[in-house]
Amino acid sequence: MTFSELNDKIVFVTGAYQGIGQAVAQTFYKEGSIVIEADLAFKNHELNQVKPGLYQVNLNVADEQSVQTVTDQLKEANLIPNVLAHVAGISTMDYLVNSKTSDFDKTIAVNTKGTYLVDKYIANLMLTTNQPAKIIFMASQAGKNGYRAMAAYSASKHAVLGITKTLAIELASKQINVNAVCPGIIETAMKHRERFDGAKIRGLQPDDIAKEDNSQVPLGRTGKPQDVANVVLFLASRLSDYMTGQAINVTGGMTMN
Image 1 (cartoon, rainbow, N blue to C red):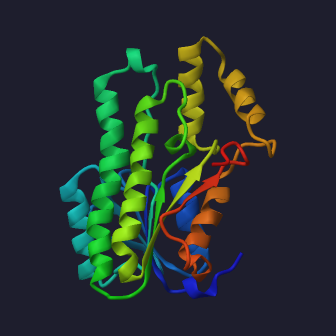
Image 2 (cartoon, one colour):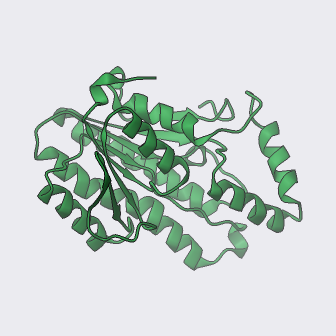
């Protein structure tokens, strides 16, 4: 898959340290894009060029000062994104009646407030160029459905879809397309941890959860981070110019609405 128009485009990817975010960042870099990887796991709080066309910076998406600081650094370095791929997110698990309020607050802070903050600052930076741009949020099929022991996560991702739709309307006249990707069961470190947490809550083994996961997918397998990255790449390309406010499922058929 090659999108030549993404060569030399500036792409800002949050949650880029591992999992889907890492796959997204690597995919754009292979396309020749200039990629800024942002993640809480990166130690350098100053924008750091690690190789030609690839930068890394520490970012706490739930902290407004952190988001503003990174945005200011992008502006100073003249690295104003053409594409924002906001992937950073977390999950917590427990039945709602047993859950900790602190876990709910943390999930909403990262997944929902983080989406709000990153978009607020990066979209404003994009607007300074008066050029077309693409914003892609990472929602989830849990933003369309409910799942046991995942009330906080599901609520946070429903909210991401609300932000996506609203922002798509607000930025349409500025030639900025805003869409969301809704992954299904994707084999990441977070998913593997969820299998252990879910098994403990339900009195099962992680292997039981893995078998259950696969049984729910019509295509017969769970997803890989690259499956999601491919769709993000499409949404960043000119092929998606007539799409905005959409929530695209990447679920192997598990969710079809």
